[in-house]
Image (tube, rainbow, N blue to C red; front, side, top):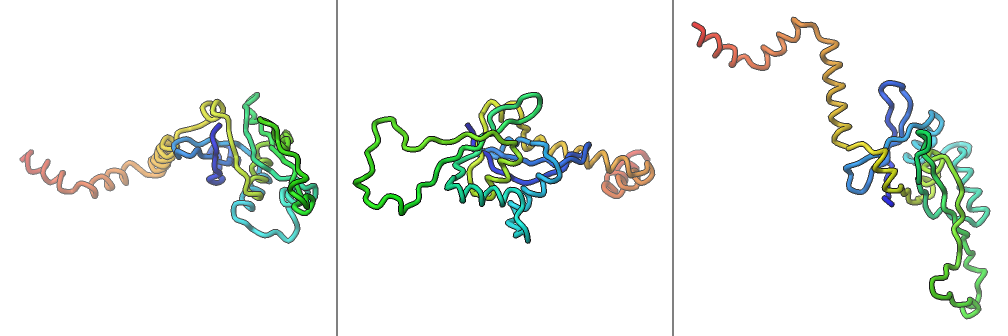
Amino acid sequence: MVEMSVIGIALDAASRSPIVLLRDPSRRRQVPIWIDQAQAHNIMAGLNGEPSPRPLSHDLMVRLLAAGDLHLERVIIHAIEDSTFRAVLKLSHDEPSDEIEDPSDVEPLEENEVREELLDIDARPSDAIALAIRTGSSIWMLEEVVAEASIAVDAEADAEDRNEFRRFLDEISPAAMVRHLQSRHPKDEETDDDTSQ
């Protein structure tokens, strides 16, 4: 598995739909996940640490987890099915510190025994990410999912440069393009003129 970090929200240029971007530790690959406007707002509010006059859905979820003595250990995005990402919340029970008064009352663990089992809760990736941001929990993705869905970070920058250049070409007239090129290379043109005489 690969631990991913949320680097922000972007807009799909074609559909104008929000995308949450997750990046791997090498910073060479990122995974775009298309989400809706409400989820984008919830994720951004968590990233910015914006206080809300009334609790948003994910703030409420955090409070419910605390009320139930549950702790979000991590989020795992584990599959893509029918072009939809699948995620699971890994929850553990918090043990109140005052419940165990005498440490000698605690039975020792057998070899390979785990004291508490993690609860798996199916969740939309956008909800899982928003909740992970608010609880400071890690976000993990199976390597197969990263390999299938990731785009190279440099490729994204290259695509943006190409789009910017296309917009420039669409907006400029041929005469303005000639003037622009002449203003960039006036010495080259003078040299060309001199050699032709």
